[in-house]
Length: 482
Image 1: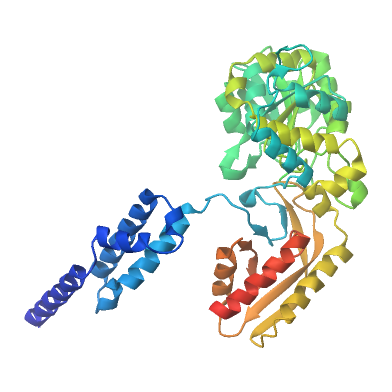
Image 2: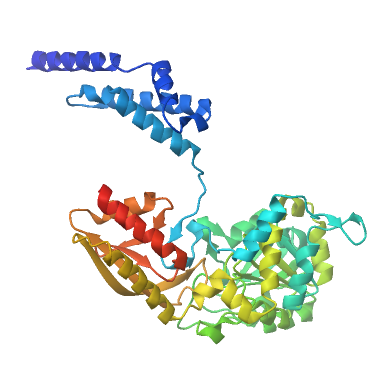
């Protein structure tokens, strides 16, 4: 039996060797590939790498197979087709547009907030031409890169001064490094939040060189807890808005205004990390109440930090607002240069902030706000349009479902907020739901939905009007190809 097995293994090895010898060389396959239509536009280095990768992959496949190996694995036409696909894939952008059909508005994995078209247009102009990034056109001298947004932020929020860095974690880090390095910062235990990627407030504080002093308990913290912890080493009192979770039941927290009063008593500044800052009160549009930046400023916080790409609806940025004497110190910190934002982020942020000068315009033109406040009747109308387009395909295998669902805000904001929505679900007889999801995700542009109850679900709250025909075309193509 052992001898038979050894002979069988030897014969299989001989057969694999014979098949491997049929593989064309790199030069032969490359020469054939270069003659194919469209390949003349692709750099030769990409074609060479594609051919080598395909040949290496096929060799590995042949050697690793346990059973019979078919010689057609080495056919030139098959290898050329694989190399062509590999070359086109290598030429495709890694970062590209997708259709968000998940129902999560501020979707971290899908780029968070969308920019208004008018802002995107200005961004293209600024990024493709020279700009007055650090040049004062009126004085003809060097200027500050923050001047284009600082005045707007002060105008919209009522603060004395402002600064912008590359994200909110950087904003908190810079503030703590400047104002509390080597000293103590008092924070409620119930506000030691963790954001995406296991990034925690205590970690940020440790990197800043500040010493964390926890007070209170997870669910209840009182003003006396802060006061009892104050020492001659206390540099800041810190309040962190728990924007990505909510504690309910037997809870207590210290209002910002009371914390500011305590800080005034001991001459200690108060920093408030809002996480996801709102410039307008969304409770007036039926959403849960969240503290606005203006309310936080009015409560007397000395320094306020929040993200630019969450509820604000702008680009990724960390916004720092506050008293001029403190912001001036933060601006002078050498770390600020390492965390500063570029001209494209500044252009995008300025454009979004200008829209906020009129609240009605902000709600209608900033995509994040527009999706948050989208009436259910509008979403329902979109769902009906998509359903009708899919019905027109006239495919009996296709099952189309209209589903009532709830969208989510996302981005660590309003975690308990349900947004009533309408979804279209599809099933295809003879095709698994996983195959449907994969096809839609690999379409150009990719369509990202979700699977529930063996159905591929698409939420119309986050699908743009002009994307409905694209989705219908994707389903039509899927029905032909699968």
